[in-house]
Structures are given as C-alpha cells and as structure tokens.
Length: 166
Image (cartoon, rainbow, N blue to C red):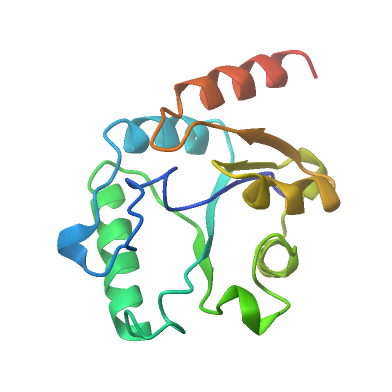
C-alpha cells in the first residue's frame, strides 16, 4: 500500500539558511520548532523526506563526506525528539551542470516515491523557493511555499485542515 509523504526542502525550511552554504555540523542550525512540527506530521501518517540541492559539493566548498556528516547530525538531532526522517535525497550538482536530479526537476521526488512506495497524489512538497515546490506540481503533489527560516506551524495547520476535509 502506498503511503503519503511530506517532502521538505532543507536549507531555510529545516535548518537556518546561510548564503555561504552550510559547510559543517557546527554551522548547521536546526530551526527551533522543526522537530515538533515534523513529529506531528509523522504522527498523522506522513513519511518525512528531505529533498535538497547541495551544489556546495560540486563547487568544491564541501565534500560528499562532509554533507553526509551534516545529514547524519540532522537525523540524530531529530531522533532525539522521536522524529524519524524516512530518507534524504540530495543533488550535488551546480546549476550549470544541467543534471536530471537538481530541483526544479522532479527526479529526486520520483526516486523517493519509487523507493518508499509513496502515493504522490496524497503527498505534499514544502519549500521556501519556487524551485522547491515546482516539481511537486509537476508530479501531482500538493505544494506549499513558506517564508525562508519561517515556521512549519502553518504547514501543520493546513495539512490537518486539508485532511479533515477529504
């Protein structure tokens, strides 16, 4: 049976956005209310998936290993609050590399859907930029754009409201 998912952009949605990229665990700052709201969404049955462009890797600013350490840290911090992300999909390519996985293309979302048996018609894509949510519209997900470094409270409210009206 296919399950619904919540797809989240990382920088500016899960953690504080940095114009110079998050380059280490020390620079990674989880936004304060994120674990609380992710847990609420998890508890009502959504798989939590992070889909993020991380061109800092192919720009030579961080290594793939450093990115893995940052993501491992994120997962560990969330698990301390009984919040479990199903998976993290990241694209290391620069925009000029014209790859298939970089948002606003939908490949990472489609890969996640196949890997984790996700019902895209019951899923949501949450991001702080148009390029984050555009792929969601392309593949039939509901979308919501939020303010960079904003709160996920509005997301939870809308999701719960929508769930009641279905």
